[in-house]
Length: 192
Image (cartoon, rainbow, N blue to C red; front, side, top):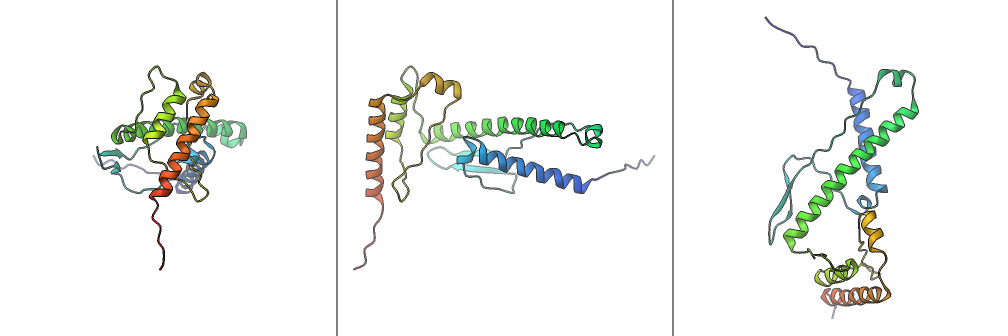
C-alpha cells in the first residue's frame, strides 16, 4: 500500500512568527538588566563555540531555546488583543529565564576555567568583590571609565546592602591603581 502524506506549509505565517521571535529576542536584549550589557554575535553554525583556550579549554554548544505557545482559532477570529499580549508576555518570560540561565552557566564555566573565581563563603560580599577586582585585569575607555558592573540576584542584593564608606574608599583605590596600571601598559608611539 502506497500511502501519500499531505504537507501544508504556511510560509507567510512561519515568516511572521520568525520575525516576531526576532523582535522579542532583540527587545529582551535591549531592556533586560543583564542582557543589555552583553554583546551578542549571531552565528549560523550548529557546532561549538570556543570561549577559552587556556589554561583550560571551554567550548559550549549552540543552544536551542524554545517555548510552547498555544493559539486558539477563536482568539484569532475575535482578534483578542489581551490574549495575544498575554501570550507574548508569557513567551518573553520563558525565553528570559532560559537565556539568563544559559548566560550564567557559561559565565561560571569561563570564570572557573580562567581562574577568576573568588569564594565568598562567610565573608562580606563587598570585601570579596574588592579582592576579586585586585586579581583581574581592567580596561578603561578614553575618559578613564571602566564600565564594570556588579550583578546579584535581587534577594542577594537586598541581604548584602550597599558598601560601607570604607569599602567604597577601598574600591576607589583599587580602581585608581588599576587605571594607572592600564595606562602604564598602553603602548605609546612617538614620532621623532
